[in-house]
Amino acid sequence: MTDIAERLEELRESGLRRRLRLVQSPQGARVMLDGRDVLLLCSNDYLGLASHPRVRAAAAEAAMRWGAGAGSARLIAGNMPPHRALEQRLAAFEGYESALLFGSGYLANTGAIAALAGRGEVVFSDELNHASIIDGCRLSRAETFVYRHRDVEHLAWGLREAGGRAALIVSDGLFSMDGDVAPLAELAELARRHDCRLMVDEAHATGTLGPGGRGSVAAAGLSGEVDVVVGTLGKALGSYGAYACASAELTEYLLNAARSFVFSTAPPPPAVAAAEAALELLEAHPERVERVAANAATLRGALSAEGLPVGDSETQIVPVRVGDAGLTMALSELLLERGVFAQGIRPPTVPEGTSRLRFAVTASHRRVELEQAAKQVGAAARELSVASPTLLTA
Ligand SMILES: Cc1ncc(COP(=O)(O)O)c(C=O)c1O
Picture 1 (cartoon, helix red, strand yellow):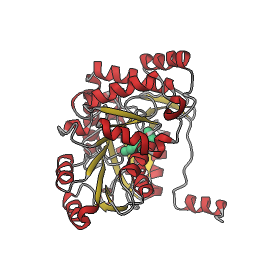
Picture 2 (cartoon, protein in one colour):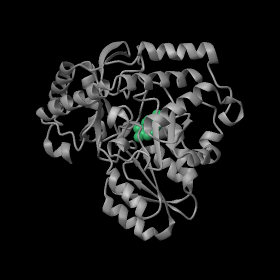
Picture 3 (cartoon, helix red, strand yellow):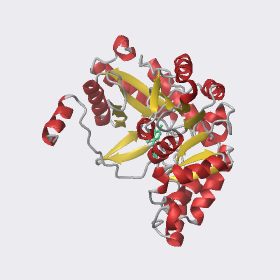
Picture 4 (cartoon, protein in one colour):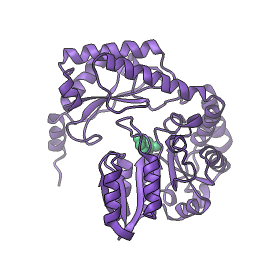
């Protein structure tokens, strides 16, 4: 039996013990964090819609009309008009025949992957894919070929080796810890050539990339060609939950075969209605998407000017690599003391030796806030002697 106290102590000693902080105000560019007003640079509320009055009102109205919860799984007694309305709207937005809601992105990924691959088959997964994709591969009981990050040559080699057993290629569209984008055109071509399916997780790309925020698949001109597009409602769409877009046939299959759909309570009507209101706002105000991109460029430029390389980030997710987990957390704490909240990211979220500060930029930030924050990061990094370029790029 695991000795819990010992295990917690081990985590503390290796700088990996986590604790919860308390955010005492709605999401926004600034929040009250554990009693202190801070600039928030680690929220995925990319379009600033989680606290938008129209989104809040939609949730409140749905709570009064439909109730706080859906009562059961969709396939039993939990399928209600807000679910259907949002699915139709999401499918149209993404350019697919059909969409299916899931309780969360974690559930969508685990459920869809395990439904699309099985024993005797092979799933191909980028080494930096999100944990929910990794867990989906494990649950599928298929063999998993983990290809080097964005390395299509390595993937092509693996596909050739797998022969006719290739079932699914799965990738983040926009990588959640690095801010870079998957080589989607090449992935789609390889999937076609090897007669296997392609699934793309748009968790961080919905609302931030592509025409009108339609995501990385739309940005690559591949809407409808990628077999399954998963998106979340809990990030740019300001609510909670997720969806998978696919052909009508494939969606019907997921409805029958994805265990995280079949055996889990339907998303609550207020969350669903809030996401629909957010989607409506996104469609009416695509300039919010442009603002995220402009703010991200500002932060990337300002951090680089401080001598802090931001890797291959080309999006609103901006990592500053430190390497050591303890040093990363020390930097995060020092910044917090100075009113800048950027989460330190450690293993197992990222590979050993690649701990980093992960900045997430939103449409709500002002340019000057981002420029000042970058200066503070530069100063704090120098104080802790983490600004050596060799350390940062290692
Ligand atoms: C790439 C990616 N996929 C899936 C998820 C899971 O989504 P959710 O938070 O809705 O469970 C996340 C983050 O939470 C993510 O970063």
